[in-house]
Image (cartoon, rainbow, N blue to C red; front, side, top):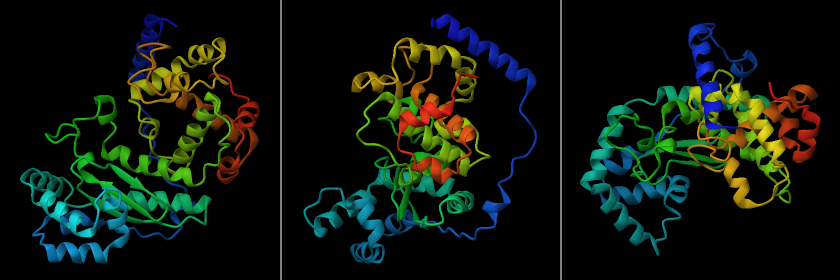
Length: 333
């Protein structure tokens, strides 16, 4: 595929899309999701650790929230609790950190929308996986040190990462193609995709590119099922034009994988080219978005579930990537 071919296809589809417009039909969650009782209340830990913090208050906070303290500070490498307290007092009294906290407090003066969105997401997960345990959810200001911690019992959201993209505080060490995914629209899909790993059974002995594609495909299918009203671009972290362009060029993308016999490739460097973080998949085209193998795996998984009448639970339990591919009947649109 040449650069001009991919670029022309992108431009053509974008013009068609612009002239047709988006569907105005509102999306609503299934009643089966909404009937499940869930209540989420975010613990605003940044308020405790930044407002009038003293050694006595710090000790109290660490003792009162041991789960949060362990997840947030347990891997900071301090020799003892006294050293941890000293460092936390220095960090949270730093003028720059205080300014960052104040900006977060202004922008996130309420987190009601995040709470409501998490409630809807957890309802969807519980509908498909009744054994799911709703985690405690905390917010914090990490100084761009930690964006998200998602574990079975706890979720911590680094709110500073999710300030508006035009805000003067930004995680400068990250490339722009990753920074653009740190928006409030991406927050819940990212959390749900991370939660999918609790249910995403895989064959750890399968080191092929296909196995990687299917793993991510199952994760994105999980997130889209739980969040049916969320546009694909927020699930996978593409721009809308990248989603449109990928579908428009799906046959060429698939042709590249088949012609180069990539599905059963086991070379880690080659695999990273197609599923690793990158601004674009240069071996296909400078216009092809990065992680294109994950997107292709998502399409294969969609077809596998749809063509075999499987529940989400049955899909996530299937470990055999080759079987998923074989029974998917996948063909480019």
